[in-house]
Image (cartoon, rainbow, N blue to C red; front, side, top):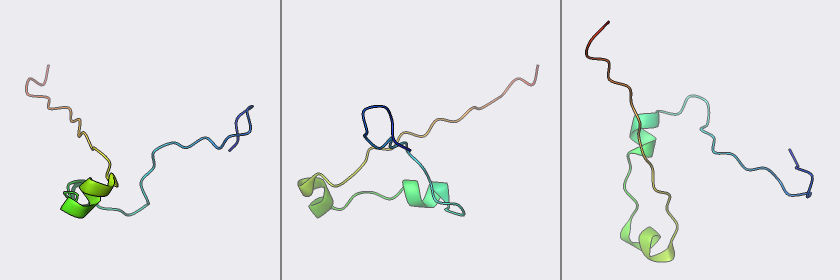
Length: 52
């Protein structure tokens, strides 16, 4: 979808059926890091200990 300025809106997405923990948990190789071809991934989880 294009916005008013004519640029494509790019939002993060994950392919259907992808195993999130396996795919997103992979480390970038040394050559990828040197080229700057990696994305930092932060996992956020809700851990409800007290079921109140």
